[in-house]
Image (cartoon, rainbow, N blue to C red):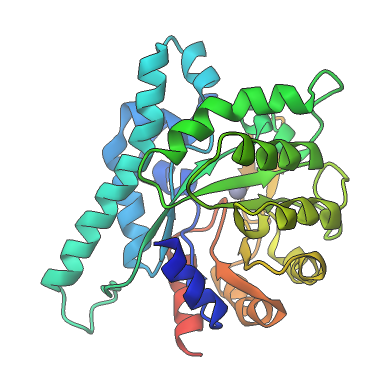
Length: 327
Ligand SMILES: [Zn+2]
């Protein structure tokens, strides 16, 4: 499936990713006040996750990112789940996205709505990207936004932390692995080595986050981080997520200096995150209209996979889809 998408991207095509998951789950009534965050819904309300996935497909997304960002073996075990149960929950995150794809594809076949209906029903390749959040995401203390893991965390610690989850997700039916919100160089290195050591059979993307438009959030050089992704054969795209839209253009230009691979970007809404209160500060970001005005500029700079991260919604994704459809 990726090879099909890859060909499309190399011919100058642009694929649309989905948008924020947690934001939408909360809008549908889920309570995510938990260290597992959106992964909590894998246990309590998988139907909501499936619905949000379907919403994104109906608004033009070609790629769904699973609800496994904060789903880790260690996090589930801390909640009292057994080894087997924890592994099953990881697989379930991919199953739910696959179900959503099946439901949506069926709707496309049956074409339940007239063409004037705002819902987008278009048969196309749909990919499932299994999300792998950073070690900092598991800590649930905001350290994926600082990249500061302390001196005790080594390359080996990180590889051991991620190993089982990566093995399971790679073998779950997902089309690719999305290593997201990578905050520092050491974690990118850990992922690259893990992909080789475990001989992972599905492709992956590495997506970093930045606060200054030059470096990743830890202060490590984006150019160095991008080079790690470039030199790993299993990495098929590299990019930026969970970063304010205003910083994206310069970051794409930087990545293009070290990468020949497709560039994936999914900025957040630009709102400020309050790490003390663990919530986004409302109305500090950009509107969907503003977000969408950047899309053509990002694609001209070299982005070929475009979506949204935290606090973006199906409306944001529909705006991206419409903008790109006009080209
Ligand atoms: Zn985000």
